[in-house]
Length: 380
Ligand code: CAA
Ligand code: FAD
Image 1 (cartoon, rainbow, N blue to C red):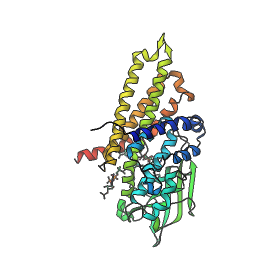
Image 2: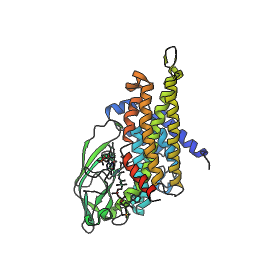
Image 3: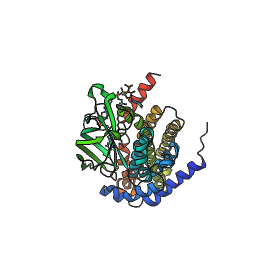
Image 4: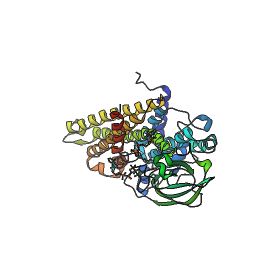
């Protein structure tokens, strides 16, 4: 067993840390306040290879492993979780799914632009009546011979308006239940594709979340990813990896809040000494440190499992379940360590606290992760 990161891993971690400090930190408060999408920053992340980290270089990607991806996600998320969710969706839900299950034509057409950050993608599974209960798809993709006719609504879609490439999950054969679902490539310029209003959110406010409406959208059969009826399996397999990305996002939010709380506690004085010298504060820091270290191990273990082609459904679910709880606990305590300053925007921890909450909801709520984990351990 080797807990040592390689030289390459350390370089990627440093590159992401430097980028986050120099390019994401300036303006992060304003983007959160105004719900502004980080266009420029995402473009630069593409240039640095962060938007297609695990994509094969022959399709324009960085050809890196999942451990590198986790390290970069942590560093980016310490500073700006809105930018990191765009990165996570593009890397693990869009590029990975397409590279793994797409046809050669689909990969050649889309991956180079997605991996370079020229464009980014969206993954559209959730619906008004199908969130956790993802098999209850109401969006239909009726087989019309050479194309599917798509009708329905998708909810809460990250990159909903800014994306140029959409993977849409839809029901073709109701009788076959989840075995009658397809994954289709769609674009906004298809007639009948409409983007709904932008959601006004508690956190990750710089990211772009919309509902999507489809009315008689014609989608060529060539746009299907995988075999007929593979769409639900495609979504589950893709989400299994996506959960590692969101776990790393939660880890980053937690470690960002911890670093701020640690620094603040060393210079803020009360009752004649630094607050870090009061045991109540020092113990909070100790708890944060231990929890973050444990979350990091779970994230890296899940990434390692994926890189080693071992099953990562459970390790990814464990990493997301635990890291998202750590993100919530750590950010709440980081606000507490900052006292009144924790409650105002310029100290960053209130934003991290608001951003932390989503990691317990999207890509499968914490309750859903427990379903995945408990089913697995009960059938072992
Ligand atoms: N890999 C491959 N196949 C899988 C799988 C996996 N990890 N998990 C399930 N499946 C397969 C099952 O084997 C089954 O197929 P068979 O009948 O052929 O065996 C099929 O999928 C249905 O599985 P279940 O019977 O377990 O289905 P279920 O109705 O009990 O639901 C669930 C399972 C895990 C709860 C699933 O519905 C789920 O993950 N729900 C949460 C949805 C979710 O995570 N949404 C996230 C949207 S994207 C997002 O949120 C992005 C973002 O914010 C940034
Ligand atoms: P529900 O499924 O209605 O759940 C409500 C509550 O009931 C939750 O606490 C849940 O855990 C619990 N619950 C439900 N079923 C069970 C059960 N069987 N046992 C125990 N508890 C249960 N989706 C996409 O497809 N693509 C995206 O890009 C995307 N981005 C998102 C971005 C944001 C900001 C948000 C808020 C959501 C996004 N989502 C996206 C949707 C997200 O994945 C869903 O919100 C999530 O899966 C939960 O579904 P729901 O909101 O319908 O909640």
